[in-house]
Amino acid sequence: MLPSKLRLFAFASLALAASYACADPLQAFAGTGSAPAAPWKVVGLPKQTKPFTRFSVVELEGHRALRVEATMSYGNLVHPLELAQPPHHLVWDWRVDEPLLNADIRTRDGEDIAMKVCTLWDMPIDRVPFFDRQVLRMARSRTNEAVPAATVCYVWDMHVPVGTELASPFTSRIRYIVLRGGGDALHHWEHERRDIAADFIKLFGAEAQELPPLIGIAVGADADNTHSHSLAHAADVQLEP
Image (tube, rainbow, N blue to C red; front, side, top):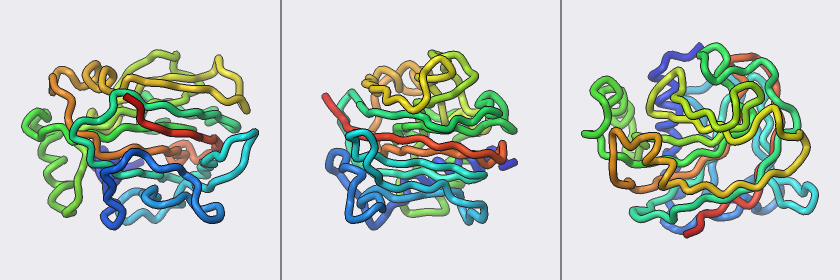
């Protein structure tokens, strides 16, 4: 089980794509062959020794889709951004084909997710609570790259009720919104359109009343805590006004 600061470092690392810094809207997953195209980049834990979640581009039911497979693994596919005034909406299609039956995002031992789509925000550090601020400063001292102070993840979870909003049991710098779950069909595409500005203010409004810069989008899955396996897909991830 990872210490809370390492989980924070994991999401801090989501912005570590130095050679692919990008101020443009989101680029498509598809590139040459099955590897996701730059500036998308696989990012894991600092000095990660466990397996990485696997990301590949496939054709699936008319979608040029991102296949996300976790086997006792951890990893995120990250698209860095530099948007001081970001579009307010994020849209995407996603599906879960093999869920995590033993996961429970409310506990450290069970915090694994078969599919998540996350927004990464550069909230002013003086708005961050004292303890989290110290951990965040430690993370930032280890890199010259941007490190998000706030992360909102939309998740597909089989057990927690849809509509649930909660903080990660590892760190309050990551907040979850459960969009899909046990009542949604497997192997079936679902379309989402979220007001990411409103969601940020709702979850972090006690710390920041204004929308900070958006510095990245991440798609990921992990099955390291439950030592299990999941398979999911995402497609057509785009920012809209």
